[in-house]
Amino acid sequence: MSKFMRAALKEAEKALQKQEVPIGAVIVLEGKIIARGHNQREGLQNATKHAEIIAIEKACKKLHSWRLDNAEIYVTLEPCPMCAGAIANARIKKVIYGATDTTANDHLCESILKSNRLNHKVLLEQENCEEGKALLQNFFKSKRKQPGAVQ
Amino acid sequence: MSKFMRAALKEAEKALQKQEVPIGAVIVLEGKIIARGHNQREGLQNATKHAEIIAIEKACKKLHSWRLDNAEIYVTLEPCPMCAGAIANARIKKVIYGATDTTANDHLCESILKSNRLNHKVLLEQENCEEGKALLQNFFKSKRKQPGAVQ
Image 1 (tube, rainbow over the protein chains, first blue to last red):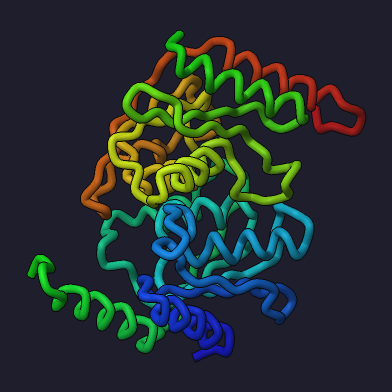
Image 2: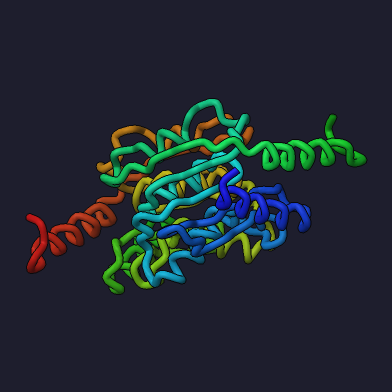
């Protein structure tokens, strides 16, 4: 596993410790991590606070720019449409994701990243991350075992 | 024009006063506006700060919940993929947009709102808003007239 995917995984573990869906992301520019984020939807009670959005917001703040040209984002799970859209809007160059989102069979992430609407296309690559996948699977398995959960 | 689209238009005008791309949104629950937002990408130098995201964040804060069930969002322009994804993630019931986004010919907004991935589909409706369209057209026209602009 690349050191950057490992850093994203560490972020996912932080989310897990807070009982959040364990997803993490880091943004890399010129070989250095400039921002990190983990999912905080429940803790912040804010539908937009996915790992990628938090990392993008921090990177914009750090660079004093909404444009993150040449940056790459490593994320433990294939981005949802909101996050894929934010990645494209921020002009991020490349997404490297760990696990495939099995709830999404409509290839929306790829369609959004490759859309012509911004004259900017984002490269997309998968880097296998079994640990990230296992974190997610175990999280949902434990949720289903809770009293009152739909089996 | 409905009073809610008029309120969204007022938000777009606020964006224009700040030299931002003039787009505005309001979120309505049980017949009342619970949150307003206008595009602040440049002012905040943050790629995620579109009108809809700002309004969603405010509504979540107001309701102390990431779920905005039964809420409707009025927005002066067809949402971009990031905002359409955020609207779906927040479980908003319906989008009413003014102008069609002519840069998007791939129907991504609709595909995202109607996607099966969340077991939640968002209704989509257009309400004609010539004033909102004119605001955007005049904004881009004036930008093209600036010295050094690509004609």
